[in-house]
Length: 288
View 1 (tube, helix red, strand yellow):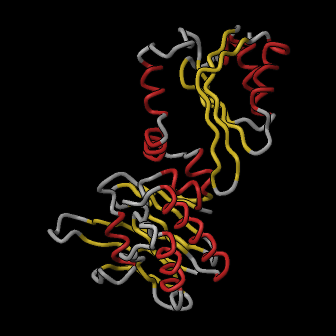
View 2 (tube, one colour):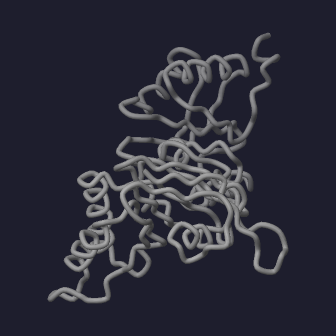
View 3 (tube, one colour):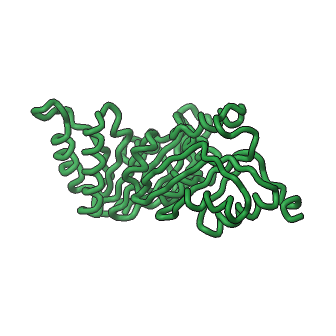
């Protein structure tokens, strides 16, 4: 287990804190992803955890050995790639440490090398029960392999929890901004607010999030049957986060306020997360 408690680090120029009250725990065999915008303090935290920075307050405790910083192997295989070298380095560097920290490890890797790294990292965590902290600004990398996730903003850990929730349905505004712009949703929302999204017109637009085996499109089709609400799909994506399936649909809708409100409640009852992106429902009008 890797446990970090109330870690803070002052700026070298005396201008306040670079890191403030950082606390988290990574269980044995778990991979936790850490993300944040540039300048959020990710590198400073890595330095504190791995012993490269000693002037911090708080506690870093790891069971079974020191916290080790991953070093990308320099050598290449006979075929010019680093896939075998990466596999060997994971076994070597993962041995004898209490936790492994990787700081943007996929930078400069081709897709096959990246796949080998993530596959090996998952195997290392599972087989040795090693806690792993994966620091990256690549949202796809974190989604592919992490069990848990945390978001660092201006030196504070403002959101953490299960990877599916933090990376798929974040609660904090800054986390949502990061996720939406990383996965291309930012462009979709920009077109929506500019009134230039094809198929949306001036109608209300909802983003529907489905988990697991929930048949999203089938539920959308039922809105017309049960509530006389027509739905036009203008955006869609499917993700696997922490081994769980998440689907998102952006739909423009047309119907009376009362029917829209009932349709929204119907979706929520069936386990669909509804985010109103444009055209909030007037609940008083809907109850009329």
